[in-house]
Image (cartoon, rainbow, N blue to C red):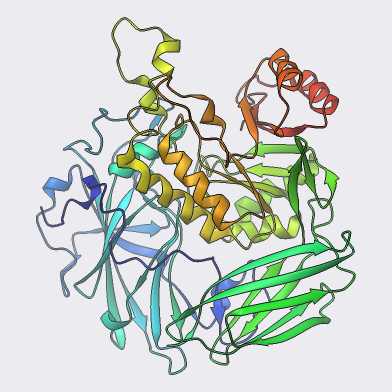
Length: 551
């Protein structure tokens, strides 16, 4: 085998990746548009397009070091990236819901593990003010190894998250070669058993960001109303690339007028906004934040809003809210998991036309640039980590009925300390990437995994890191009877497809947390005949904060 078996090693989730950070696109000056036009940034080098590709039915069939500098790709095919290799005619499409698409033996995956070799050349020219180069992959299913000019760069997994590598020392002036080996299955696939087609490859954009030697690496914006929701404040905490640098921070309103300005020397900025306009799904008012270090400018949206739960009722900006939401998959009959700006805008316009005000990103984070669309158009987002181990429910237990089997669902993965790091990693990658998005009001730990020590740790970290949002995890109800479980960091009570009477029972017997229907009125085929019944009960109780249609 030409690569180390990181793909079956729970102690190696990533190799040489940069720390997690918020998504942004830097430029040499203030960006005119930070939504559709990121490719116009002078610091953004898009590598999507035509790549050379060769497919193997098993990783063990890969014998040649295709990533070596000068390796001939004459016998390779040419494919589009982003794309799914099943859509190119390799391998086969497979749909499964609950059961894993391979025998369950974590962390091991089948010996016949299909893989694809990707190679492309590109031109790179070093910029004096931005000599650093960071390679970004926004989505690769399921794991991948990376080389630049024959040098091993790193390894990563978690299909729907961004993986970033510092490739500065491996680039040369002029023509360079990028090689990627993508595997269909890895130990992370046990945590990616979502109800969807199984497709493989580089399915989101690949690009290089050109950055200065010193500058902003990460920032965390906390924008909240104050003084009875009349004014607002914007607090920003910076993390730097190498040494701290002065940052000129300016906030503009929607009309382009300057609202506040400060120069930051100590890594922390605080701006007051008098008579603040608040962000909500109904009135998605956005300020523009400009952070200038001299060698680089980062432009972002800021929405001032607040969410909390009180006496079992969910409030946004002090008002009770009902989610009229939908679950959303990246799924297209022609392009598979590859969703363009035009495709997502068609979805969002249709949603707005039908009074949908909320999205649950089932069951993984969406492409990072889409969240600015949610900010601008006005959607409340339940941002869900890329985590579902539904197949663990189907472990064979002789002479055991369904209810007893459900008590053991969490045993293999969710309540197994061996998977704590992987579960925590998926929560962190979701939260860190999208932490500055005002549209994100709830963090979801995942879907249909059962509950245990892994999710207790993920919830604990999430609440400690970001107490400004609520937390969600429907599958917390599936536990064993071996011990008492910790729900102290879970802010909502969530159900999918419950009988109407069960909702009445919850508010009669408990009602201490907001009740969310994270899935209901199953709308695949001849579905939602019970929509009116659900709406009646949603509006009967203040604590019923609405739900999300599947799908």
